[in-house]
Amino acid sequence: MNVDAAINAQTRSVGVGAIIRNTKGEVIATLAKKVTGTFSSKNAEAKALAISLLWARDVGLNLQFLESDALTVVQALNNGSICHSEFGNILLDVFSLFSFFPGVTVKHVFREANKAAHGLARFALGVEDELIWLEESPLPIESVIVKDSTNL
View 1 (cartoon, one colour):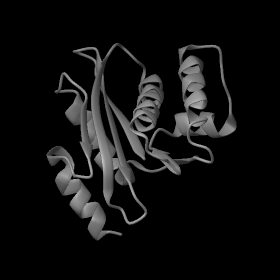
View 2 (cartoon, helix red, strand yellow):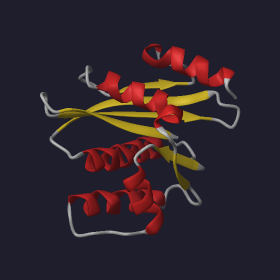
View 3 (cartoon, helix red, strand yellow):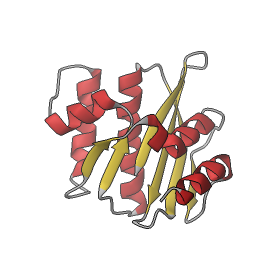
View 4 (cartoon, helix red, strand yellow):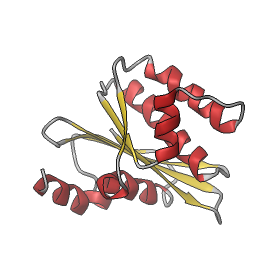
């Protein structure tokens, strides 16, 4: 699963984007969801992870890898470092959700490798309801997914 967040400070909202692919790179499920609130970028990225894990759990999907371009968040999760702050509280939520995905590996990827999730997060800023696609490529990021599949 690739996850990303996009922030719109004017509307005080965060777009969450997540895409789950199988080992062949085929799309299994995608999520675009807008969350109201003011978050720092690292808190928004951590919140996006928590929301995406909760969604994957509720849909009943198994995850082996979780990828994000938020280096600070990935490092904190891999180091198990929790601070007493809003960021630490969100990380605690993420850690508790990991129990539903035994053996999940959290990896940092560069933004170039996270374009589909980023496109979904930006798209989510313009929607009101949570949008989910199962076993199909959502139109807002179809060109990115096609490009990714040719690079496999």
